[in-house]
Amino acid sequence: MNQKELKELIEFLIEKDIAEFELERGDVKVKIRRAGAQTVVHTHTDVPYVPVVPAAPLAAQPVSVSQAPSAGATESAQPAAAENLHIVKSPIVGTFYEAPSPGAPPFVKVGDTVEIGQVLCIVEAMKLLNEIECDMAGEIVKKMAANGQPIEYGQELFAIRPKT
Image (cartoon, rainbow, N blue to C red):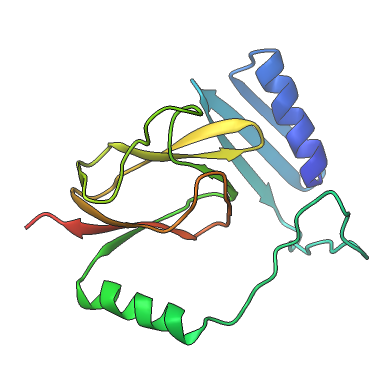
């Protein structure tokens, strides 16, 4: 099952308001369970995953280019480690949104005090809005993603100074 088929399946399940779905096709098993606006997707396969790389990128899609960290990036990471800041990372690939809707105030901004479970941002993935919650109480020291920016799995989103 490729990514396009999986996306179409999720969109169909949302359209038909199906809360739970399980599919086994050969050695691939897909289980999708929706809880409100959040969708959890589990996949299992006995065959090793081999990514398919297209011969040439499509012009309409943005192309991500990895760059070696510059000296400035290394210097900015060192103070965060020196201050023992907690870094909130993206659990999924998607688009970062700092507010619940366009024109609304952001969930949090630098200098705000946050509690465990408080919503920090939204990451949209395949038309699903996933709320990213704070996993440590403290103060927002730095926001590391721009509104509307595509983000990767594990990308740093916020730096939080833990409560003392």
